[in-house]
Image 1 (cartoon, helix red, strand yellow):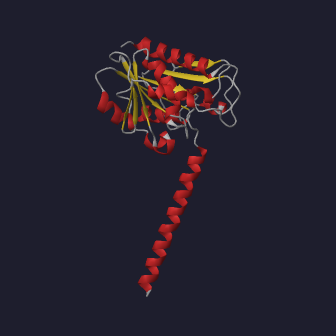
Image 2 (tube, rainbow, N blue to C red):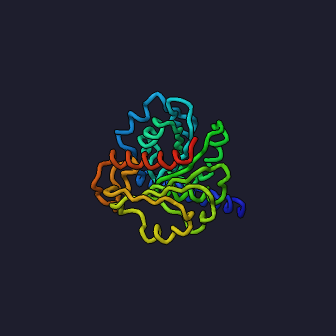
Image 3 (cartoon, rainbow, N blue to C red):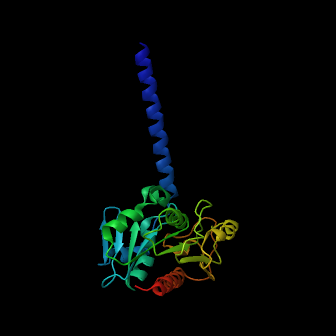
Length: 246
């Protein structure tokens, strides 16, 4: 009798856990920022390969650098396809990993797997938008041997990610009308980045226009278009990687 009661209790606990997990998954799905229709052309281009949970954007010829880019929190991976295509057109192979629940923090070490599978001797960079940038910084702080540079879009490192002594280039791009990024935290964590970090603020840009996923709650309207912000962002990234050379 007692055993049956324990079995019922265990089954009830399992059922409650499953219900809660299902509710959490449903909530996260409802909060996810879906990519805009404009990304369809970028995803359908002939240079795009989808290999498992990795979206690869190949350049026209041999890549002279590779970039693994982590999406913003609860933002669909495909929302960064336009930026990836702008960089691929200039010779950079871009990898957009599809993260669990669209949260890069849940698979921050995916850079290792991508690098191991695709490395051909070129320089490798890592970057991300918002939470994706913070995740990239966490990775670099712990495993920076294979990384030639870090790119942060509207992002800053966590207190546990001290990169100040690392001899790798870091590019931090923000936007003047960003209403989402915590400005105080951004300023206070500058000390965690190398002294020669390049900080650039895009005048008239906002948080959501670093991707193609529509508007974001709390964000500023932005005085420039999404297309212009993307072009400026891509050029800044190309400047950083170009300075390092192939």
